[in-house]
Image (cartoon, rainbow, N blue to C red):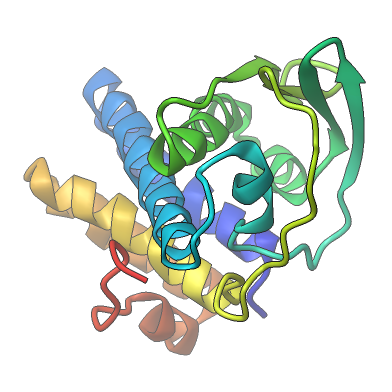
Length: 214
């Protein structure tokens, strides 16, 4: 039930609700995406520091919080001093396309990986050259990085997709509440219940987890 496409659907439905508020709503959606990404990046850095690792790109890649369930097509390569990731297909792009939400994909995907790196260690340099929503592939550049060592992920690094779905709901709804736009949350809850059912919605609205901490 819970996977990358569930996660993307939550993002897309929130985007529709934010977009109904006009330009202000879209700016708040971008802020919510940034907030969510930075929280994830900080959790990754806290686990890494706990385990005695430097906050470099080797550690960043090892301490990522999700494991792929749906198919994804990606190539890795080295160009000079930079490490390049080229993503040719991914479940987020597929879901946003199915929902006719190319603009959501452009807004979200321009922020998510930059925010993850910023939350993990703002001294690392990450560049996003293109995204799938308007290009042949998503090109991500880890500047001045050559993979040097293999770091094992700790047992608590990977989180299941119910956790990630609850986290994106928390971040998006929190930003809406902070801006005094509870209507955005109410609309999105209704859309989520219609799409996934009340039980899934109940599990996504998880108020017991502090997403700032590991």
